[in-house]
Length: 109
Length: 112
Image 1: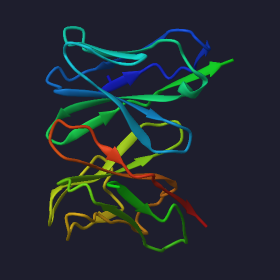
Image 2: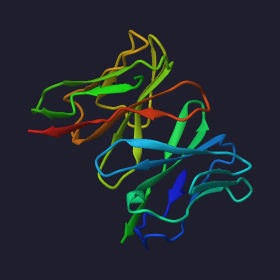
Image 3: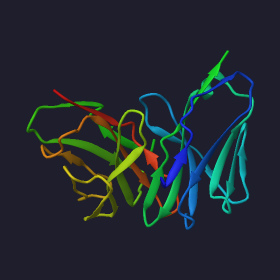
Image 4: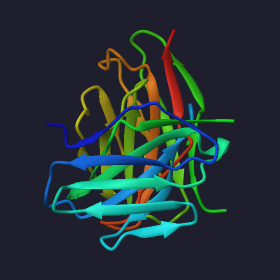
């Protein structure tokens, strides 16, 4: 089993749609979790950290479910500019962050 | 503005040649990292350094070397022993153990 797994997609959605991505992780001792956004041929950029209580930043909501070992990202009212690959990142201990392979989102007019 | 600067943006390597990728940060971060990303794949850790004059191998260190003589700088050398060096190389840094990493804008390395 991979340490961090994501559905590669692509998720094709129309503008204004709500879309959700899940990411599962295998190490139950993982301490911190993040979602990054990566545009084509660019570096990953931090979208948001994921806290135990869940957190929201504008149209983006992140949730953590420790019991089932997954994190989720919900995007409401999708914009064309949301088209990108979304990377799930898990801190598995001692300076080690494990990156998922990413979920590709395509938002169409 | 604080940030991480990688250079060059594009680099070409000849057979048998060593090349060095530069990574400089002015964020005052202790920890720095080098990743490799291949098309359609996730980031894989090459080396990391938590403090000056100390660094550790990551998952795919073979064929690479690093140094950390200054807090701000963490150069990566791709040696001739790395037989498949074509990839997108990303440098990152972070301030603390459970904090997110911040990335430079990467170097694309290709073989001539």
